[in-house]
Structure formats: structure tokens, C-alpha cells
Amino acid sequence: MSRLIKILLQSLRAIKAFNLRTIFCLISVALGIASITIIVAATEGAYKKALEIVARFGPDSLMIFSGGEEARAIGERQKTLTLEDVDAVRQAFYSAYLVVPMTSIGNTNVSYKDKKHQTLIIGSTNDYSRVWTWPVIQGSDFTEEDVKGLRNVGLIGQFIVKELFRDEDPVGKYILVKGIPVQIVGVLSDRGTSPTGQNLDDRIIIPLTTAMRKLQNETRYVSAFRIRFTDQENLYSRAEEIKSFMRQRHKIPENEPDDFRVISPKEIVKFLVALTSSLVIFLGVAGVISLIVAGFVLANLFLLSVKERTAEIGIRRATGAKKRDILFQFLGEAVLITTMGGLFGFIIGIFSSRFLMLIAQFPIHFSWKAFVIGLLLSWIIGIGFGLQPAVRAANLRPIEAIRG
View 1: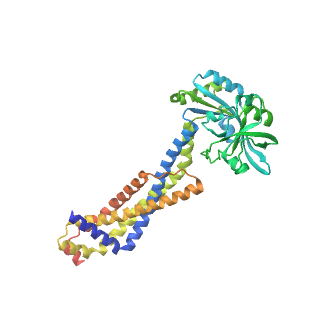
View 2: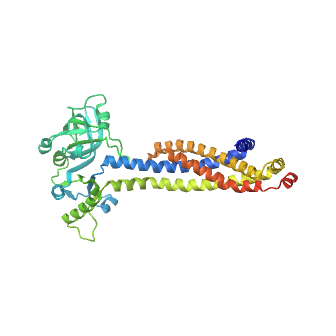
View 3: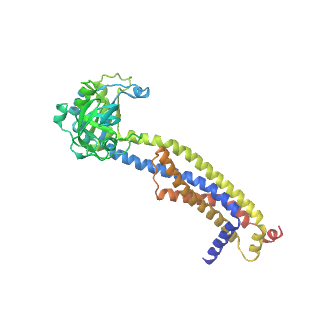
């Protein structure tokens, strides 16, 4: 044990003595480990974010939107879902305990006193907050009578409260929505942003009938409807059944695409993976290249170091040092340098990820895995690329080394 400690101390002295070599090796390893650290953290973050989004979206929920994928791709707005479709689904699927239609009106001008704002108006039923598990924290929800009576009442998100009311209590106040006075009956809890970066709290929810008749001059078509099922374990088979059911209702031929879209938690996870995959691929390639370059830099610098320290190695061998002592000393130097590079790279990765989160809102989460993987990779680089110079140093013959 004491022999190993002496070898380690000798390695530390050598690292300090050859500080330029140490700095070059450390920086090259740190850059590679920083990239790998961000990849692991981004993957962890995407997984954690996916679980959060699935929990928020509802693991028992499906969304059906008007318009097919082709219409969406070319930016064409289609209204293909009707209130009759909603009623048909409600009657056909016994396990669907909530089927809630919605219609949306974007970029709508609203005002309160001298304050003006552009926001999203959602028309829905009195089950909106329930179907989204989105509680009303001030005031109360609007009722079924409000929907039937086309009443001008609404719920508002937290962002609207800040924009229009500041410190004033919004409940009971009237705002103008496209010139129509709407009384605020409740305030929704804070929701944050969607995976696409949309501010979910920047919206006003009003009765579906009020939105359709008074704002859209519409009596039949809706933008979407949301379903929650009691048999959550069968959600994805229910999604396929809904698709078949809707195709039959809309009389879509077999070779024609859907004129609607079914969104499940699986699609949300796919979207998030696609969102982060470009970053992961780029950093993965950059990280692997950086680590390989770091390994070659380390190997070449250590081979030069062996030549420079030939006399030192010969004297140590002549005074009793064994081959394995020389081998362990050089390997120890390599591993210590790459370990420091790994730790430095981990710190760089943390600061770089904060910057990425700030400018691009990538989901990044650091855990012990990022640290352990970074450390293991740095050891692999140290041992893998430091082994050849260490073996060469250990195999030098004492007399030839001293003579050289």
C-alpha cells in the first residue's frame, strides 16, 4: 500500500513538473467530457420532461384535432370535426368518461380599462378544467347553465391576470373580448409552457356556445375535442378505435388520408425526442471526436515525455524500481490528468447547459449518471491511450536508458 502511495505521489510531482503537457491534455479531455455530459443531461432532461408532459397531458387522455397532417403541413386550416362527432364518440365509447369539445380563436384583442392585450380564446364546456386537470384557484368555474344560456362569462390564465389586472382582483370584473363584455368568474392555476414554447397561461376560456355563436358565427364545427378514458391501460388501442370510428363517420376511402389528427401521450414524447435529438447527435459526434483527439494528444505527449525522461526512468530502474512501478506511475499520471479533465469538463458542461436552457429552452437535467459517465469515460481515455507510453517506459532497459 505504501509503495502504491509513493507511486501516486511520484505521478503528482510529474504532473506538476510537466505543467504544459498537463494543461494540453486536461483541456482536450475537458471539452470531450463537457459534450458527453451535456448529452447525458439532455437525455435525462428529455426523459424527465416527457414524464412531466405525459402527466400534464393526462396518461388516460386523447386529443382529436380538425384537419389532417397534409392540411397541417401546408398551413391550411380545416374544420372537419362537428358537435355531432363529439356526441357520437360519447355514445360509442362507454369507457370515455369525459368528452369535451373545444374551439379556438387566436390573436384576439381583449381589453380592461386602458390596458389592451392579444390572447387566445378557447370556447369549451363546463368540464374544461376537469378534462385538463386544471383547477380554478380563484372564483368559480362556469356552469352548464352558462353554456346553455350563451352567457358572457369566462376563466382566465395567470398571464392575463398580470397583463390586465396587475394587483387587482379580477373575479367579477368585465373585460372586452372583440367588443363583447365578458365577466371573469374564475382564475386558473399556473400552467407554464407547452413543449413548443407556447404560454399556456395566456388564454381566456369562455362557454363553447358563446364562442361559436357570438365570436365565430358558427353552429356546428369545432376545432378539437378531448377524451379521458377509465381504462387507461387500453389507451393506445382506444386511439386506433377512435381513428377507425372517425374515418367511418367521415366516409373516408381506404386510400385517402385522415381529415383529423389523434394525439396521444406517445406522440408528445416522439415530438420531444425529435426536438432534442438534433442537439444530442451534434454534441455526440463533437464529444466522441473531442475524446478521440484528446486520447491521441495524451498518447503523443506521453510518448514524448517518455523520451525526455529516459534518464530518469533508467536511474529509477537501477535503484530498485520494478517494471510495474514505472508502468503504474505513467498510467497514474494519465488517469490523474484525465480525471481532472473529466471534473473540469463536468463543470463546463453544467455552465454550458445553463446557457442552452436560457437561449433554446432545451430540457436538461443533471443527475449522478452524467457525473459517473463523464468520470468513467475520462478513466477509459486515460488508461486506453496512456497504456502504450506506460508500457514503453516500463520496458526500457536500465543501462540503455541511463546511457541514452
